[in-house]
Every structure is written in structure tokens, then in C-alpha cells.
Image (cartoon, rainbow, N blue to C red; front, side, top):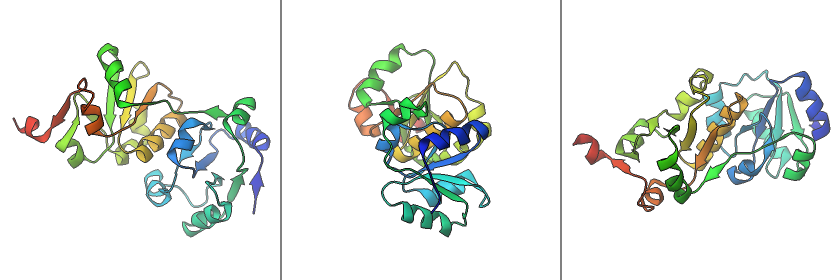
Length: 214
């Protein structure tokens, strides 16, 4: 099995900045620290592979969760043969030391409640399906489904001065966040928790379907 050390990966990234790195670790580990420009996959490879429209001829650098062999087999089943496994035992400190560290800022519902009233540049993007959004959503949120958001053109429309807040399930917000980072935008936060937990702060208004009809 082909594998690569982080130091050698850094050299490869300097030569080919569009190198495709897929991270199969859970979202909480990914958010805390990942290789710059990598894309979060977690256990959603079939779905995210479809959204990314990956070419089977691409060379894939993969960060496995626990079993590198299983990760390679999963990619093989999707038609990928050019796979290089990135050493598994790296940590945030090591990534920082060699200049490859990136992370996703996450905020809890109570932090969101404190931020929004004072953030004039806030833009909340709800990545859920249109039907879920119409049923209930954070007031003033914009619905851009994950399918739309996976399009580079959609990300390109984000203004640099905007403070982006991403809302959906934690896998999808980590995935979307990694796509934003890959395009060079860093001014965003991932909202943790459910709409109910956000509503329970009593400071963030949730629009429900009944309100929309009225």
C-alpha cells in the first residue's frame, strides 16, 4: 500500500496545490485540526463523492480513521486506484509544527445567541433540504442546499466581508466548511446543535412553517 509522511506531503503540496486530500476521520476530530486544503469525508464517502463529482483518475491522498486498508478498499469500490495513505498517527501539534494545520471554528447555540445581535455582517447559510428549511429555520437564514453548495461557483459568490454561519447536521457543515477553506475563505463558523437547542436560548428567533403561511 502506498503511503506518505507529512513532511513529504508538504513538499507534494508545494508542487501541486490542487492535490486532492480526503479525510475519513469523524467530524469532531476533523474540526479540531486537519491538513490544509483537505476535504472532510467522514463516513459519508458515497454521498460526498457524488456531490464532488470526483474523477476516478484523480490521485487521492487519504487520511483514514482507523483502518487504512478499509479506507483504500472503500475508494477502490468507487473506482479509484491511485490512492496514497497519509500517515495515521499525526496530531494537531505536529501539523502545526510543519505548517499544515487548519481547523474549523465551531460555536454552540448560546454562543450564536451572543454573536448574532452584534454581528452586522452575519450571513446564516442553512444547508438542509428545501422542505426541512421551509418547515423551520433560523430567522434571516438563507437556504443553500448542500448539493448547491458543493458547486465551486456557489462558494465564489460569498462576499469576503461577510461573516458566514453554517447550519445543518455536523457532517454536512464540516464538509461544507472544508470546501470553503479549500477555496481560500476562512471567515465562517459552524453552528453546533439543533434548531430546538438554538430556540431554547430564547435569543435566536426560529421561523416555523405556520409563521411562513401567515
